[in-house]
Length: 172
Image 1: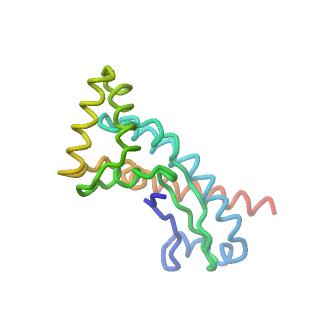
Image 2: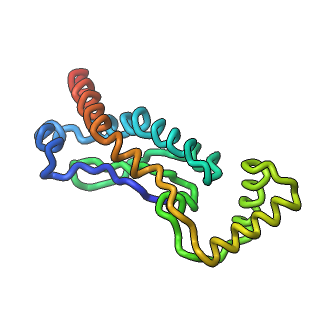
Image 3: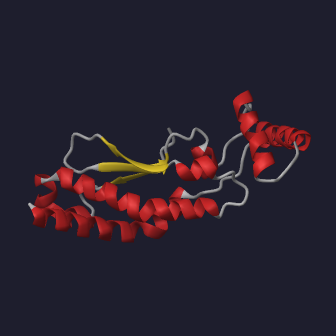
């Protein structure tokens, strides 16, 4: 599972100070607010960023952008945001060193050549073999989509978390 961004409140940061005692009293409400905000604010922006990547076969990667809670014993909740469940997600985000290409990956590369590039079966196999050779000799270039989304949207995310958290507190 690829891990990209851990959204975590640090005890010294301004947001944690603002929430102060409230966060200590109801970490579950804060965790829910973080998760809901990530699904509504970060996920669509990351999916759009993946759609814009021309050199990436985006279907599975875009669909599996997700958010999940990480269990912590401390009172400040943590969530993880990334392309969870896609083994190559981190390679797309950060690039990769040269490595061997497995047969299952070669099959996906053939599908990529057929669907994304409109190649016939023979052409797709030749193109997939060439891409595999490049991966084995040079690795892959990064095509970041999670970190740029986080950098662009983190202020909106934290503002939304605070608003949702305060709304949930008022319901109690």
